[in-house]
Amino acid sequence: MGSSFYESGENGYAGAVAESVNRAPAYRYWVLSLLLAAAAAQVTPSPAPTAPPVSYTSVSQLNLMLSQLEQVSQAMQVNLAKLRIDKWKTDSNTKRGSEADVESLQRNLQLALPEIIGQLRASPENIAATFKLYRNLDALYDVFGGVVESAGAFGSKDEYQSVQNDFSALERSRRSLAERMETLANAKEGELTELRTQVRSLQAAAAPAPTPLKKVIVDDTEPPKKPAKKKAVPKPPKPNTPTATLKPSTTTSSQPPAQQAQPQP
Image 1 (cartoon, rainbow, N blue to C red):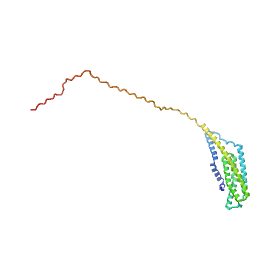
Image 2: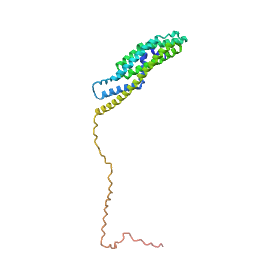
Image 3: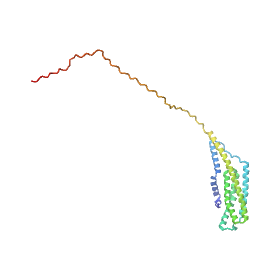
Image 4: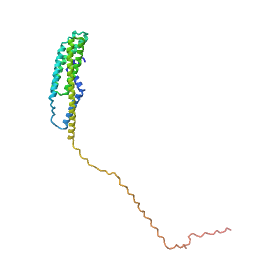
């Protein structure tokens, strides 16, 4: 890693750290826990929750870790200042690159690192501040590793030995901080699970009781159809016939008798 990371200034450094923090799983646990706490506060009004007290063991562990890191930082600054890069047996471009890296390391150790350590001391179990420190140590480790390698290749034996010891101490501090970050992430995950359960309980308690529904029974079974009765059709009455016997009519026919044809003369 080049020196541009440090030379970008405090704003550039903060932006790079913030970008890394947004991608960290531990930081997502922290953000999600805050969101769930806000949701719980909206469900039912309650006093502002206070942060749980930090255990004495956790604070003691962090203070010891930070004290050791500060000692490593002081030793690094002293040994970096002792490097005589202009005397190294290499080309001028390599010398200028190593000198720029040393200047960037000195600036970080004197300005950025103390500020981040102070933020973490003020909030010992803040995952965001813990990861910010780890991210800074990771950047220091990358740049310092290149300087140590160049010192071993082009510098004196004493120069290489001094910065190599500092490099090993920085690696131990970085590893210890990574282990603490993992422990905090697991603890926050447990708190997050408990918080989810509390939010569900609060939501269930605040929900209005459901209105009992009226039961409507619909009988859709059709009754069996009764066969239709046939109406009786009345028979027409029989005509009354006279009992007397009809006699032949004696009335003469009204037609004139047929004239006989007369013979012609």
